[in-house]
Image: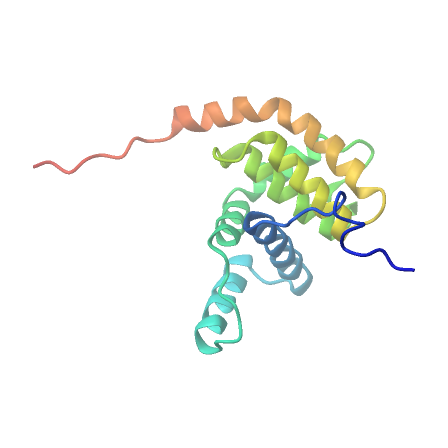
Length: 169
C-alpha cells in the first residue's frame, strides 16, 4: 500500500522558488557541459525561447544569477573545488556533482544573502535528488571544507571591489 501524502507530511519538504532556481541552474550547467556550448549562450537561447513560446517559462532571475556567476568565476570556483578533492580530480566527478558543487561554492563566495548553512543544505538536497547514493555525503564533505575559507574569500572580494563613483553635480 502506498503512503498517503498525510503519512509523508513529516518527511515532505516544500520546495521554494530558490530551490527550484538552483535545480534549474544545475540542469543548465549540466546541459551546457554535455552539449559543449557556452552556458551564457544557453541562457540567451532559453530567454529567447520563452519570449517566442508562451508555454515555455522564463528563466528565474536567481537561476540567471547563479549560472552567470558560475560562468564568470569558473576558474576560481573549480580551483577551490579541486583543492578539496582527495584522490579525485574535477573531471572524474559525475557531471551533475560538478554542477552542484559549482553552484554551492559560488553561493558561498558571492551570495551574501544566502547563509552558508543554506547553501550547503541545498547542495546536499540537490545531490540526493539528482545524483548517486554516495553524492550527498561527498558534496557535504567538500563543502564543509569550503565553508571554512568562504568568509576570507568574501572579505577579500569586498576589499578589492571598486566603489561606485557618484556622478558630479
